[in-house]
Length: 522
Image 1 (cartoon, rainbow, N blue to C red):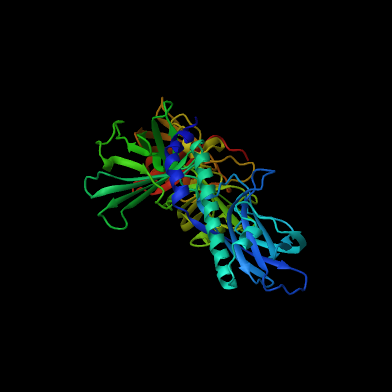
Image 2: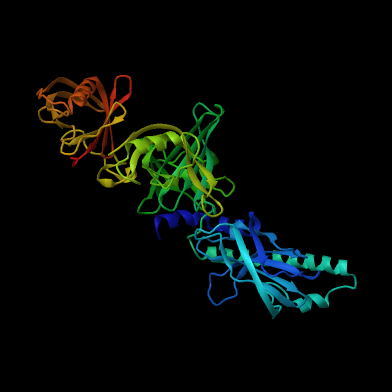
């Protein structure tokens, strides 16, 4: 059983309960028209059904239906259905017809796909003439049986039929729910959240200087996670969001969360539907309900807000952002500081649609899909910070979540950003670089016009350069870059390595230069 299946197995029993007892109703909306200029009789009835047609050769199961008495062209309708019964792997269609008495006078010329596989919740149907006898759909009694139960009063009869349809619809939903529950019990691939395909755990953990730390952890099947920690009693702003990757230990007993900023957390899988946070020593928190995260279906999907780094691309008037630490990819909303992000990308891009590393403060929020119905997670850029052409989340085209950090010394570091601005060189020119020799304590490199050398001192994260010299070769193309590069190196006091990326900071903690491993071609 895979790591994700082990985690999601915690959700099976609760998911079954949700399916049967806690319906989340939604609607499919549509319009049906017929070309013929005809006046329908007073007893005409329009019917539309939402049907699961996944199994070929079978009639399918009805998730919902609607009736419109005395319809007029065009016919606008909506079908209520229980969203928790929708399986993203299944195929759903809308069928429609107009009945007059015991005969089917009009029928949709095709069944429109909806809900899954990129299809939305709106349909447009064209009805064509038909004169076939009435045929009941799955879960529906025959019209003759219904007629035998009619009373003498037409109004009473119409009321009884209406209530009968409602009862049959509800019975159909319950039967479908029972089938879904049985299917979920036999499969460990179902999750609690039908909207995001994730498993959500929440609970309060002890806090030294606040009432408690409320945790909400959302685990995704692709190995990514969202985590929110709210420090209760410290105001509305005492909330910290984190995103990253999770892995499962070989014995299936422990989850390891690795987030942005080199944070690492370990969580033990407890009894059914629970997780327990481990301390830095690997020991469990004191055994109490306050130290437990429990599986829940009542918490809404998280909308984390934080500073993020990721690869941004822009094509056909649409942006997309792939976050470095979690590797999740989202469309970018046309709001907030998105215009500034797009402008920076268009100024720096090398080719249409090419990926460029950017840094933003943003929020991952649910927004309507651009195409089709429903909603999806979307990045809302609240503040654009900077762009780094030529850089990636990690060296070698990898991603940040699982990359091994490079070493400061004996590594060829290529300069990619200086003073918050990307470094570009002309074709045929050598890119500025830096190398540190651990045996001699000396540095060497290229500054744009000539070679440079000097001494350095590194201790933990501190880094300082001294006695920097250049060969003072006369040139014009790289003279200004060389001057700025040397001045920046003299101001450095700290270094940070993330994956295959080196970032240098001055004494005030301001980022002054960025490098990536490896030589760069022209």
